[in-house]
Length: 427
Image 1 (cartoon, one colour):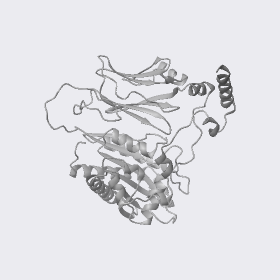
Image 2 (tube, helix red, strand yellow):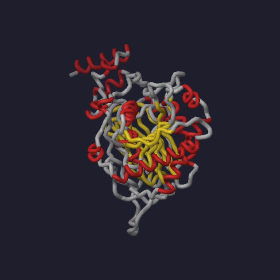
Image 3 (cartoon, helix red, strand yellow):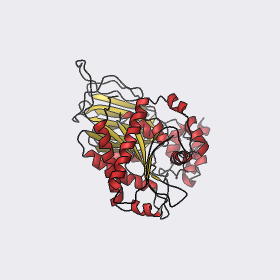
Image 4 (spheres, one colour):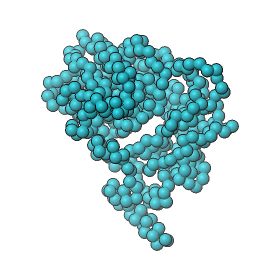
C-alpha cells in the first residue's frame, strides 16, 4: 500500500513538473459530460486550465477529495452570489436544517486550496457568506439567521462549480414559501401566513450574452468577435432595465467566461425568471447579407433557420432539427410558446421602430428554430440576432459605441411593451 501511494505521488510530481497534456491528467481526474450532451454537441476546443495541476491537487484527487480552487462573490440589488471553482464534482447537502444561528451547507470530501484560503484571509468574501474548513475533509458555507430571505444552490459542470445565490433580508419581495424546490436550497422559513394568493413584487429578467471564454462565436473580417459584442449589448441592456421600477435583472455571465448552454437555462429556471433574452450576432456565407432577426424555440421552418441554430448550438446540421413531437416531449406548454412568440414580435417591432431612420435596417422577421439555450427554459424566451458580423458595414457598426447602445435601447422598449401587455403568472 505504501509503495503504491509512493508511485502515485511520484507520478503526480512529474505531471506537475512537466505539465503533461490533458489526456495524461485524466488518468487521475476526468470531467464527465452527460451522454445526451456529448451525443448532440461539439464544444470548441478548451483552452488549458488556468489552474495549474499541482502534486498536492493530484494527491488529494487520489484520496477522493474535491479541491475548492478558487472562490469569488458578486453583488447586485436583490442578489449576492458566491461561486466556488472546483476540480471535481461536489455533493453538498442541499437541504440543511435551519438552526437558531442560521443554516450551514456542508460540502463533504472537500478541501480549500491555498488560494481559496488566501481569499478568505484577505476578506474577499461578501456578506452574508461565512466559509470555513469545518474538518480535514469537509468545507462549510454558513448563512447567519436574519441575513437572507432565501437562497438557491446550483451544481454546475464543465467546469465544475457550486453557485449559491442569496436574496438579502432587506430586499422587498413577497414572503417565500416554506416548501423546498427539488434540487435547490431550502428557503428561509416564515411564520404561518393566512392563505391567500401570492404574487411576486418584481419581475425577474435574465439576460444571456451569447458565447464567451473559449467560445468566441462568429468572427468578423476585421477580427471582431461575437462574444465581445453580445456582452457589450447585454451589459447596456442590464443597466437600462435595472432603472425600471419593479424589475430585477440577472445575467448568465458578466465577463468573458465560458458558460454551458444548459447551465444558462438552469440558472434562469433556478432564479424563477419571468423572461429570458439571449443576445447573439449573426453570420452568413454571403457577406452582403445584413439585418436583424428574432427567434423563439420551435421547429425550424426553413434551411436558413436550421443553419443558424446549428451554429449557435455548436452541433452538426443533421443533429440540430427537432420535430413538433420534441416540444411535447420536453413539456413546453402552449402558453410558453405563445408568450415567447409575442415577446419575439414586440422585441422585433421595437428594434425596427428604433433603428430605422438611423441605419439601413433589413428586417428578417420572427422565426422559430431549435436553439439549445431556449429549449429548457420554463419562461418566455427569445434569441435576438442583432446584426450580421460577416457584413463589413454592420461589423463596423458593432464596433462603435452608439449602435450597440441603440440596440439595447430598442430591446428594452420591446421588453417594456411586452410586460405592459402580458399578464405574467407567478410560477
